[in-house]
Image 1 (cartoon, rainbow, N blue to C red):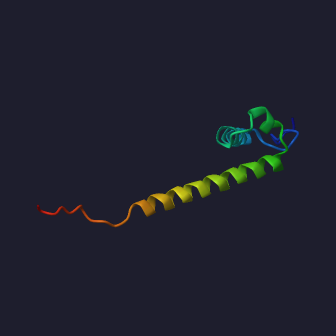
Image 2 (image 1 turned 135 degrees about the horizontal axis):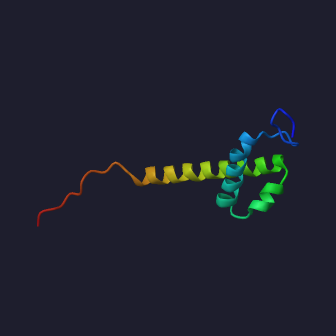
Image 3 (image 1 turned 120 degrees about the horizontal axis):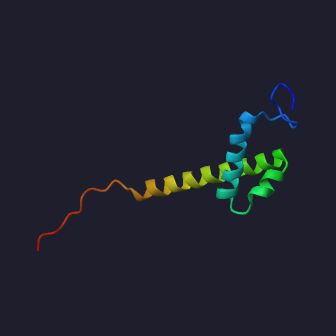
Length: 83
């Protein structure tokens, strides 16, 4: 290991937590990848899948927000007729 603290591939040990968080998020929320596949995957491909997952989750959240907003129509309290 060099004196700069970088490993052979150029990632400092301080990035380890962020890398493993990315691996966890893709494996947990991505449905289909396991940790070993992601760990050994080329970084650009892993970043591609991470971005696709982020985009899909943002779209899903937007659709849920639209759905809940459309279900909350501005209606007043119920009115009853006297018999």
